[in-house]
Image 1 (tube, rainbow, N blue to C red):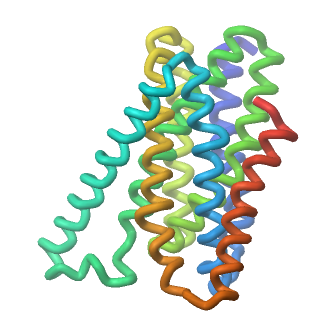
Image 2: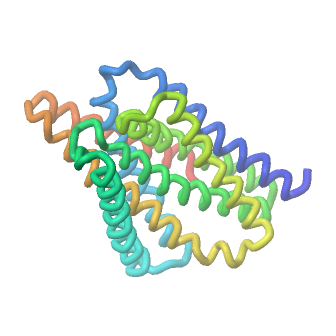
Length: 252
């Protein structure tokens, strides 16, 4: 196989496999588990941001100040995007946007961030294959392993935001194609694409932080009993721990 063939095959397989493995868990979860599993999703998102994405952005050659500034700008961007979505909803539906079932915007924003992240994963796979085929294969396998818990979190957020199971699967598969786009584009223009990798990673991180902190965590505060609070803390820690454990067992 040529290098380009390897990049196409592994980028496509990487995106699809991680989504399908996550779907096996998330889409078979019982409805009454959903509230608890959202806590796990929050932990997986924050773990991916602070243990994986932001360190990777800094290692890609950008300073901590530049990455932090981009994250701040990204949070403002996603705040503005959410306001626009709320305005559109209010404009057409008499300001029902703040009702409990009208939070589909969380799913929209998490998919925007996940698309950025998948694109960057494709860039990383291409760079590895252009260095060495064996390195490319190992890198692709590592990316799949790292992506699965995050994809589980994405599925749970989409379902929590009102997406149907088939719709959530379709949206995630569509987002995963960004990995293929990143890999192919990088094969032809690797140096120019690599220069924007830190920015894309920081924007992906900002979307995940915003969704977790602004949209999902406030929902947890509706359950105020001590038992519920302890369960939420344990599940958030479990989500973070999953990302941490995979980082140890499958180093990038």
